[in-house]
Image (cartoon, rainbow, N blue to C red):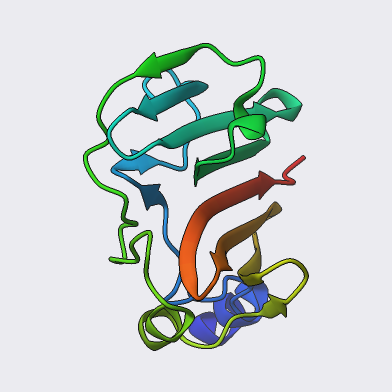
Length: 157
């Protein structure tokens, strides 16, 4: 009887299991903001790629982006340093085809075909008042992956 009461009080689980596509690292940099993971911009001269970590809303929104688009790093102090890789933690690599990305990650939540092809994988979660949204975004041009962006929003109160 006590067990039944405890189950009734706890209710159903409101935490959905993380989707298998969810990734938190690009070029060995983590989608996180704290004393060890600060705002930064790194430029790899050999590949021409920039990796940025940006923060908005006092850390509630964190973005890491791997791109050649210099306009995305305007106003940031840039450190010239080789990147360990041009890959995500799931093994998606700059230059991959849309087919390879789908094979590894599955069907995207959204596909945008405006000015190329962009796959967006999106997950929203609510765990004990801890609301959050995660986006993993892959942009292709001429059939090749050219940009990767991971985004996290913490909507907790």
